Length: 186
Image 1: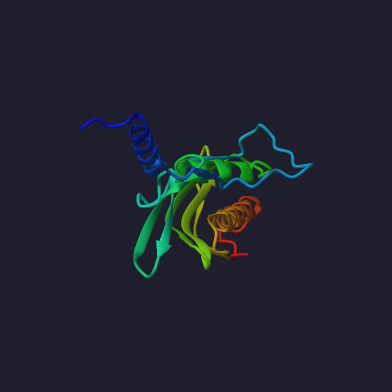
Image 2: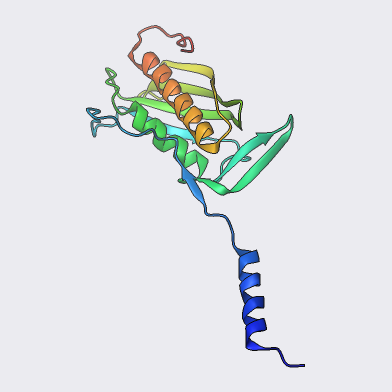
């Protein structure tokens, strides 16, 4: 039985249409820069280490579903792995701080929850100390930051941007402060 060229072409087009995937959308934790924002090239708070839970530390956006489910979104991606996105956004947010001395920061993200239509949440412990004092005084804090979110992935990315901005503000308060206590969440 011979196949006509038209039938072969139609079959090939149907096969290609079935294999078509959705376009990938990229998101970032870095907010757009505002006019007049200045960043010095001097690193005043060095991120010594940053860890993110393995479940979410990937380029694809991972969202919560129900009480115990996680969904990896194949067409919604961060600009880099989540750990690198988080680091870049935090460095950007901390760039305008002017502490009296060079500081070192360790960050452990315990939870990074993105729940469409509900909230974006980060639960993080962080330690700030003078960069050149290995056994010097340090401050260790835990911050749980939650921002309401709309139902889209864009809304979730904006909620998480806000959480990173709020975390940077808390770290900035601790960097400028003279007391050895954690700043209250804003």
